[in-house]
Structure formats: structure tokens, C-alpha cells
Length: 493
Image 1 (cartoon, rainbow, N blue to C red):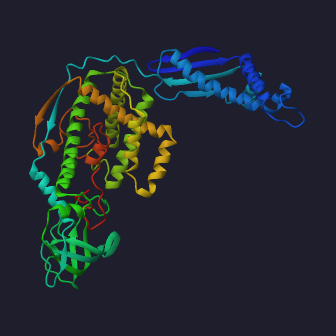
Image 2 (spheres, rainbow, N blue to C red):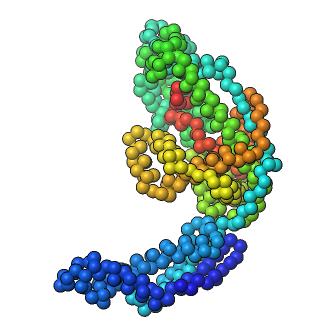
Image 3 (cartoon, helix red, strand yellow):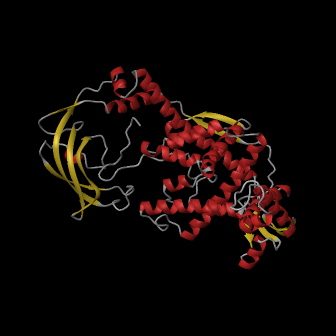
């Protein structure tokens, strides 16, 4: 096998490999000899089939196997033998001439091919001792737990039908049909919909207009959808709803005790409070984690400057760009609405893609040198967590997809590996805890020059920013139902 480097420019490499016809012939003959004792051909006793007859029958298919074996084995061995790491699967270039290909398969010509690839640059890991981050910590007060428990308990409150007019706090059961310019719109109708007046479950102004209604009343409600309403075709538009009030019910006493907890599937009020505290602390802990990670990545970004493999950057940019455009389309907005141009946005997101790839390579190198790994048990837990995000009737299918697709499993392994590397780094650097209020913790430092979020526009949507951020914790706000509902997430979730 002859190996010749034909391109060495920056991170780009091209290698020409020539396997002499004699070597190909030897590999083919070895396969034919091995197959001689295994194949069964009419007219020949087992093990007595002439090799030349086998060649006539199986020669081309066996030589095709030899070609694939050489491609698979030589690609890995040649690149590793050069002390290089390919950024992505190398591009294999073979002859497109059918006659030449036939000669190769017939064993009458050298097998020549080329490998095109980019290498991962050598990264010299620097000292971490100079990195300092501030960890914002919010101590959840008992009052926060009390408020959340109370909101959850509201879901168990009993209601009794009443005569007379509906007041704030009463529950009305309604049918409704929404119209814009006299035409009903998709998702704007509902039947037997319970609604507690004052709960702010529906868009502003809707519930207020039902105060004073009675069972059997027909009421026309006029509201304007918020400008930031998730359904872009409804945002900012005035709509009328023909509402029929079917029942008015008054609330019973709100009870917060062990029986309340049991209605929610928990054994006691104490256990309910423990669960609520755990959920709230996890939520705020995630915010703290992301802010610390952002500071860490910002400082790593300032410490490492090298050319990132263009193919990796291109792939990362394409992922980001596709998400940005999906978000703009879903919101019914354009780049002009975001006070930017497509050209400027592309440039900004390309810079973000380069940063993400560069930081990913740095973290990978740090993790490798530190011996960080993701165990099979950890990956299995991550897989189960991923599967649980899907509806119950889809979970088995999703599980089988990941188990049968190594590349898909790698998409789970990579972020888990990154988080473990971040944990390793946090143990090596200076971390100062600072007690903050809930408002301070939840505040976005959007004006920070070191923010990891891409801001192609002054009014870039929060969702688009989050999707493009390295510090994104992949937690999206609960999806809202169609009009006139304002939010569909239950407090107990």
C-alpha cells in the first residue's frame, strides 16, 4: 500500500492511497480459499470446488468486500498512524470510470482512492487557576414553598353549583366559539370548559367579562390577543367569543392537609412540601448552574484562539440557523422585525457556531486528559430520561430507536460528557458563592459583552436566543393551548 500526502493546508488534508493489484489479488485469493470449504455448489463435493470456479461465481462480490474492508481499515489506521484526529468522517473519492472500476473488481488494476478530511487542531490545555466565577445562590424561603403548595392545593378545591351571578373566585363551565372579523378560527372553540374567574388562565380581559353572568346566559366577550401571543396569526388581533355559561359553582373551603396531599398521590402534607421544595430548588439550581457555566465558557473562550474545522462549524451553523428560522416562522416575524438583516444575522450566528465548536473541542481535550468518561449506566439513565419526555404510547419506539442507532446515542452521550467536564473544571477553579434574591437570579444578563447568547437583533426573541446558547438547559416554557387560553401548565407539574 502506497500512501502519499497530496494536500496539507491549514487543517485540510488529502491523502492518496494506492493498493497494488497484486495485494488485491492476494486478499481475494485468501477469501476464495476460506470460502472453498463453506460454499455448496451443485456438481462438486464439499471442499472440492476449484478456486477458479469460485472466482468465476463469487469473484466480483468478494473483491467488492475486499475494497470495503480496505476503505474501513485503512481510513482509521492511516489517519491514526499520522498522529491525527479527523474532525468528521473523511470523504472517500474513488474512480467514477465504470471500466476502471470493472478492472479493479476483476483484479486487473491497482485500487486507488483519496481521503479528504480536516483534522482537529492540537490544543494545549492551559492552567485553570486564574479562572474565577461567581455562583449566585438563592435560598428558597418557606413562604415560597407555602405559596406553591397553596397553588397546587387549589386544584383539589371542591366546587358546588350555585344560583345567582358569578363572582370572582367562582368556577364557570362554558362553551365558546371565537371569531375574528366574523369568521371562526382554528383552535378558538371549546365545550364544557371549566374556568375559575380570577385565575388568569385565559388571556387578559376574558374572565373579567364573565363576572356577573348566570347559568344559561349567552355572553359575547371581546378581547385583544397579546402582541407576544404564541400563535402568530392571532397575536395583536381583536376577537369576539360567543360564550354560553352552562354552570356557575362556588368554591368550597381550601384545605391544605394530609388529605389534600393524598388526593395528589402523596402520603402526607409533609411529603408534598418536600416534593415542592425539591422541584423549586432544582429549578433555581438549574439557573445557578447555567450562569456559572456561562461564566466558565466565556473565560475559556478568551483563553483559546485557534482555527476550528470548517465542516464542524458549518454543521453547527446549519443547526442553529434552521432553529432560528423555525422560531421566526412560528412567531410570524422577520429579521426586519428583529431590527437586523438576514446577512447580519448569518454573520452573528456563524460567529456563535465557531465559538461553540472551538469550546466543544477545548472541553473534549480537557475531559480526555482528565480521564472523564460517561459510563454505560449513566448513559442508560440519560436514555430513560430522554424517553420519558415522550408520550407513553411512543416511549418503546423511541427507546428502540436510540438502542439501535449509535449516532443517536452519541447525541445523548455528548452533553452528558460536557457536563461532567464542567463539573471537573468547577473543582479546579475559584468559585465564590453569593446569596441573591430570586429576581437577581432570574434576571438575564443580556447586556453582558460575554454573554453566550447570540443577539442578532435588539429585540431577538428569548426562545431564539435560548436555542442558540451553549448555556441553554433545554427547558422550554410549558406550551400554551389555542385561544382564548393564556396558559395550560398546571402548578402541580
